[in-house]
Image 1 (tube, rainbow, N blue to C red):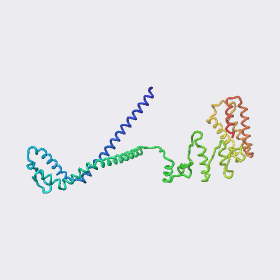
Image 2: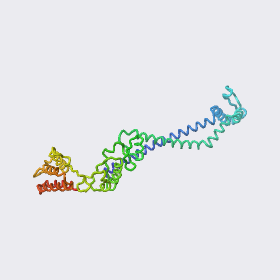
Image 3: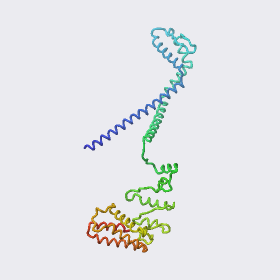
Image 4: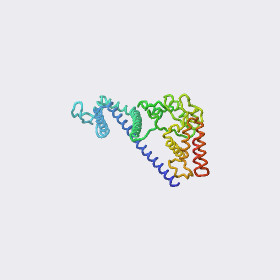
Length: 352
């Protein structure tokens, strides 16, 4: 057993021993509660069956029986007497031992003692076991509830995992339920336009979630921007009556290009911004000083984009083809240089 496995074994054994100790303490508490309830129940039942005066005379009866058992060896039974304090007459009295026993068993005190003995023999044990079981069950339920409450109180911050049905009830009761949902999972109201990350491996249902989301957006007359690299969403959801398609190679594409936002007074400035954004998309940085370029890339792309500004009257497909043609000019300038892959990457970015 190596050091790592030994540490895992030690940790596991300590946790197991700790759980056993905690279980033992809990079992002792449960047993104590059950036993306490049983004793309390027996005391209450004894109080119903017999009073203190009957127990007082029963104690004297036991003493008389002991005195007769010993005294008969030395005296005549008729000569054995007993002196006691009478609760009825409230004075000390002297009676023959046999007369006391006769009055005790023929009176109410003897009858109550007889009922008590029958209860102890016949039903006391069964009743105590039933009360003990009830006490154990109640204590287990109580300790379990206290444990759950302690866990809830111990939490300081953070999220909880709840079932979608419980979440829906919570949101509806708080009036924070959104009209947008994924299956039976409701979103929080006014959070629809926040960032939502849908992640998972292949086949986990990411596309199905989007297929369920888009019709709801359309139903509530909201708008969405879809970057459809495969064309699957376009084929399924595109409606030429209300949707705008920005793909110069599609016949239903809008007559729009990024350079349409340029106007003649600021065309050089805006075209430079567009040129830099195209380079940033490939290089990941606004600084191109790390590249070894025989000719400046940004000014050439600026020249290409600025020239496209004056060709907005043409269909988008022709403008797109002209854009790629102008890139081919830049490719000839950078042929067989370290910057040649940059132009190839730019062309790949704009291919549908």
